[in-house]
Length: 292
Image (cartoon, rainbow, N blue to C red; front, side, top):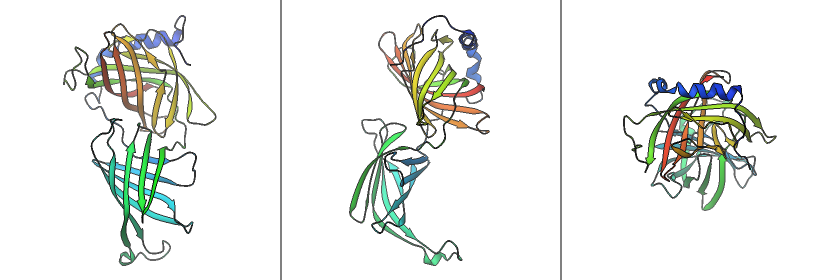
């Protein structure tokens, strides 16, 4: 099990602590007050069943699913669905449901004749996220019902090493002094990742980081594990404490590179903060890499 690193902070850790103390001005950052949640847009698959998949594109309150599957004749078939969110289940994420359609059309190598495009309803689909990176997909085609466990496909490992600064917003809380959605309750957050080692599978690994919240750092470097689901990272054992919080734990981070892999990077996600008095707050965070 990964645990806190013990001993004295190295030079990198001291630099990170000094940076944390300068975070008061970060609340005026360009995107302060604009804390974004992740979307379900990704290529999804089952790692044990390589050869089929489904692409999901989210826009507003609708997701469009395009299926890469094969029929009984072992030939590829084109299915699509538009799904809409229902009430959140126990996981806290709504299930998306809609109708499935099959489309046929003209040969791609010839003139496009829209009169030859046909669409027919073949069944229904339900996309039920369990975590930001995993879900259950249930769909029916001409009476055949299929249920699959799927996850976001990772086809390129993303390096997170760097210094990130930004803001958080309280989305759920029973902690005194941290009301939900209080316009003045934005705080500063700091993430410094000094080391990241990826396992041979390309999706899991270990990292070392220092975390700061409202000018308070963990006081020591933290070692933890991670798993990458496309652009989503889930951290395990990356937990620290401050004088106000008994634990600060990352649950997901959505990574976006605006200028290529070496360019400007930002992360949005969620943090669970456990108060020293036993209260709990969920923070939606948005940070931008300032030192690569």
